[in-house]
Image (cartoon, rainbow, N blue to C red; front, side):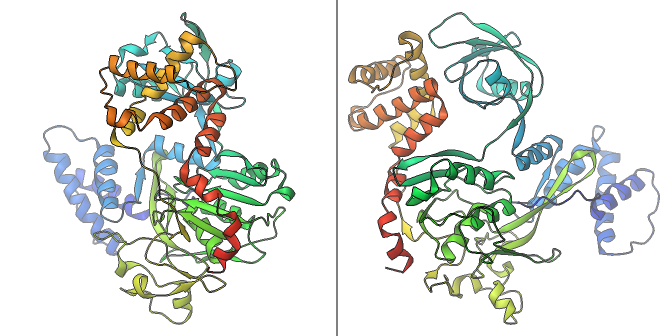
Length: 524
């Protein structure tokens, strides 16, 4: 997503509001000077009829912003959006890598809210709160009496104003009152980083924000880069973010002046991103892990590393979002996100998957940069299916949407019963109740067969069926996941996340590719 400098209210919206006002007073507008005004007159006529004849008085903001504008945008593509005041402010905070709040990651289920992690220096951190603490009330309102939706609404409304929390610490039963005031809290985009093995580093980037390149460099510098023999860079479930940030991360690993991407659109100036002089550079072998939720700026990074034969891409095909969103500020601190251009990879391919029924179809996708440089016409209905693209060393790469991995790694799937138990939070709830009755375990500890039997009995007490066909074969994974939940509540999400990642079959397979990286990049 590209966030340009704030610009004045767009001409179309100004015309809509001005002409609608004329309609209210029954005045006859002057002849329209251009096509925009012509279309605005149509909108104004409809709005005027609604305002005069609808059953109740019309809320102009609701009809125009929520109805008219969102309706227009939905007719274009899924990525265009109108941002109300809260959404626009949240977007700006995310771009800065910050948010207003208390700095906690929460586990939320019906009637129960547990703290899983507190950010260093945040209000909850300074108040001494940490993993395993349970929030039982907010400003005197007991959470166990609220349905799930009411609980979510209360949490949302409380994050931006001073609150009094009722807290029960692990192993205790009497709540303690804690007063908190919200503050700006840093939101790290590198949410997991650790030594996978003596020579291999692991880094997961959750999104691309302003501070992401610095966070990646800091994480690697903390793992003694000269003695590393490889980096497993995990981009799974990364939905993108600021493309300049993704380009800067690519620059940490590519050569000076390497092309990273090109952006081009009808009303935007072409932008070419190349690797500049960088204060840091890491020359270690790379394996990049991706999946179907790797999108946008994350795909830009993966494509640049793949096409310069710098990294082996492993996992599942990516999402296929290759368009640029430019965000303009409107009146009342609202915003408009419009699809204004496309990303093109170093070889010239578009990573946008065709979306039939929208403006983003095969026939609307532009020719690649290389085709346009050779005098292409700008559109080609079959381009994405027929054009051939290659890496620097001649390896073929696919076109037509998303990034196809060099090595396909199956994503493990839970059986239906295990998925149900996990998604409903029964593992976390049991871990919390176990800590309440048994206290904090000391390391090293393992989930015992007795604990697993107790968990099964707890499920049955909550009227959850425990079919033998699933229970018997899920024993090992249940033990591992219960251990992760206990570690989350006792030592925090960093420790629990590392434990869960090491237990991830896809990540384990990807880590085993390093001895083969050179051969894979040679096409063998």
